[in-house]
Amino acid sequence: MDKVSIVLPTYNGARYLRESIRSCLEQTYPEVELIVVDDCSTDETPDLLRSYAGDPRVKVVRHATNSKLPAALNTGFAHASGSLLTWTSDDNRFTPDAIEKLVSFLETRPSAAFVYSDYWLIDEDGRVERRVQAGPPEHLRSACRIASFLYRREVYRAVGDYDPRMFRIEDYDYWLRVAQRFELAWLPEPLYFYRRHAASLTRSESLESRAYWFDYLHTRYFGPDSSRYRRVLAQFHIAEAFERHLRGDRAGVLRHATRAVRRELSLLRNRGVISICAQALFGPRVTRVVRRALRREYARISPAYLPGVVAVLADLLQIV
Image (tube, rainbow, N blue to C red; front, top):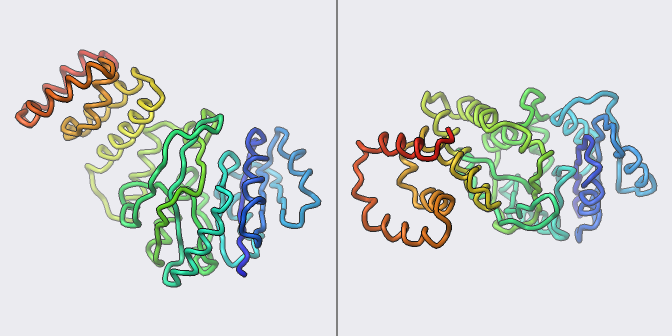
């Protein structure tokens, strides 16, 4: 039976860390080792990790200085002995059978070197908000939705370490590097809980910064495109608008949707965008009437009028 090494980098993540560790050690797949890399935490993390000193499955490595996530991952994998590798975050967790199903998938697909799955998006209290479909490997060009994954050691030998320069996009950079040399496979089953909260790395970074780095990687791997950054930023704003819709933040929906439309006018023909904006403006009851009207009339709007529509919408909302 192949051993699976799970690397868990942490920095001041005591709030959810025990829950994350437990999800790794309580897997139905028995051959698991956990390498926890404490990136010089100053909270209760060191005390918490000392409670696992007697567990032979757990290795704890502590950095003398805070070296950031890519370096912590590289430290963890340098100490890993498994033939199959993965990593997780200190605020997320696996489903109990995640590793077993990922290993089984690779066993049935010898041509694939890297498998990833769908996942559940949860709030800071662990409540499930929605399922996220990772999508097939060809979708990696347009978005990074990989959170739960497993890959063979040969990938690590060939691709090498995570790039320390790619802080906060180190995972997407790594997946693109893997995709250049190996076959990726998608297991369309949610095997992971990805937590969104105010202190997470994703939430602490601005949309503009995330879009910039996303565009940087696209230019690096797929070639330059002067219009791509505008489109990418529009995509990030639309994603944020839909997330605000799920949270009931009507002002947030309108703010981000309007900013997206200003950068990508074609979004005015997206029924999902129109729907969440209508609900934010008028509420769900009136939205049903708006939807019926849009089905009849919206297809008649000429593209030549779209800039004017955007200007009117922006003036109406007075939020950008």
